[in-house]
Image (cartoon, rainbow, N blue to C red):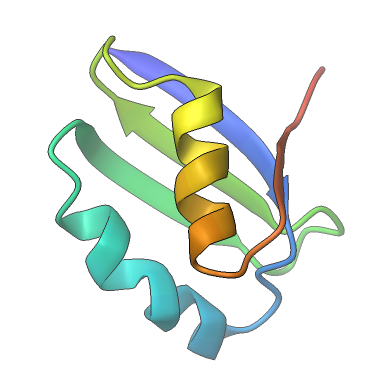
Length: 72
């Protein structure tokens, strides 16, 4: 299991709904959440070892969302 954490521009519950189907149907993502209360609008993804940061960034960018890895 792999945990990926990103800074995004997903600021509302409506925008979370916009990506819900996309992330729920992705074959390697087992769990995900967006913290719209956090200043970085943190997207946390639990996935198999076959999902990489660049994959998530590309996926989110194609949906019109900003996404970058959040470092410690």
